[in-house]
Amino acid sequence: MADPLSANPRRRATVRELVLVYLMAVVAFGYFAGTWGDGNTNSRLALVKAIAEEHRFTIDTTQIDREWAPFRTDDRSTYQGHYYSDKAMGSSLVAALAWAPAHAVLRAAGVPDSPRTFKVLATFLGSSLACALMAPLVFAFVTGRSGPRTAAWVTAAIVFGTPVFRYSTGLYGHVLAGLLCMGAFVIWYEAHRRSRLSLPRTFVSGLLLGFMIVTEYPTALLALILGFYILYVLHAQGRLSDWRPYGVMAAGFVLALTPLLYYNLQVYGDPFTTGYQHHATARFAAAHAHGIAGIGWPDPVVLFATTLHPFMGIFWQSPVLLLAIAGWVSARETVDRAAAWCSLAAISAYIVLLSGYYEWSGGMSYTPRHLIPVYPLFAIPLAFLPARWLPAALALTGVSIVQHTIAVTARWEYLVRLIQQTLDEQGHPTAFFVSTIWNACWRNLQAGLFVTNRGSLVLPVGYVSLVPLLILEGALCFALLRASAARSAPAVGAEKPSWAGH
Image 1 (tube, helix red, strand yellow):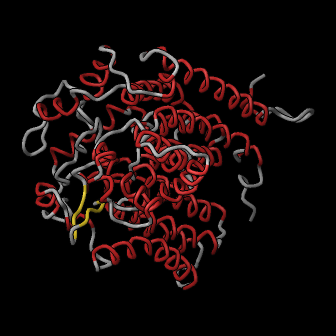
Image 2: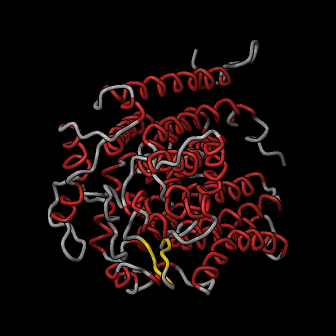
Image 3: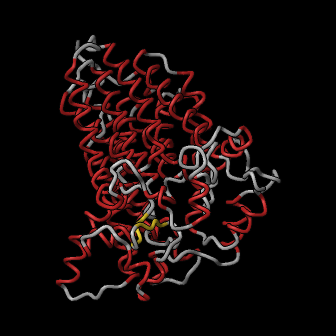
């Protein structure tokens, strides 16, 4: 039986639309790329330099050489007299593959090595360009389910109305892991919807899930939950006993794990050890020795703090995500209900798991950044949201985008002090009416503490430096609206659809 959605070209995203939404994300992320200076990104960038330029895994240069002193970090491991990054290597490997040819071109052109040039370009090429793929992925998924208009606001909500925006401007692994998770889900959602299983796509889904774990270790839980969803899809297609999907997917999964296993074997002599087991910083070593790499039993107070507390609660910072509740209960078709249950289970389980992490607030962070991998999964219930919710969706999307734009634009002076004053020794909030965005980021903007964005290279630091970004995004948004309106318009002589009015 033919799939009515696949047979209708108006329910598929066009190449032009996908390019435009990708450019919107690239422009926004690239405008602020390389503005981080924390230990986490320094650790990952140090590994990028080591792999791409020095062809080794030790990060001794950035930790010892005075010229590269800005990249020194406490987020490092030590083994047999050398320093190594303690982070999961996925995002650094992607960035190294992107930076290596760029570095070769710069050297051939006679451009001298500069920590500043490396930081900005390696972050943009290796992180922002990859993370921006989140926009066309979400747009394509929601368009196939609910049309381009719904896809536009859902994409804006996920990409610009959550911490995905801020954390795509630095070299972290959270957004990349979320992108890989969403990509694997979409493959199996389409297989379920079309009642057609492709073995090459099954192999790709295994690659995505495997590399997701290489990028962020805790996402193994998401892979497990998606595994149950995959079993359900295979059952629905009567292929539960067919060995081929399992074999093909396992091959992709193991292949994706190979770089991590090789790295650990070469560095530590054991493919199943990690940098967290060889911390060079005593307090990190002690913390990660507790529970499973620092994750203990779920903490109900932290669970509240990460979701509903104004300080860092994700539903305060991104109130549009509250509409996911309506989306989950609104799914009617069997295919959509299965997807809704999968997203609900994955999001809930991951939030509960990370509530037991010793540093759930993320250190120098305005948000519980470890939860970022599940943000793309909110696009699933938002795609099922009934049309009557559109006014509320647009309003809450606007609020969400404004709040995260403040966090992206502001410097983070006094943020750490605010966190230390608000959280007690157990990581529990001691005050209710306090917010990292409004009590730190917004106040920094009022004091003129803006990050050095691309606009500030030619314009005064401040609000005026954001004008080029607003102009570019406005032009791209206008082009997207025109593209969607053109393909949504009925053909000449065609009967007007019932929803179009008279």
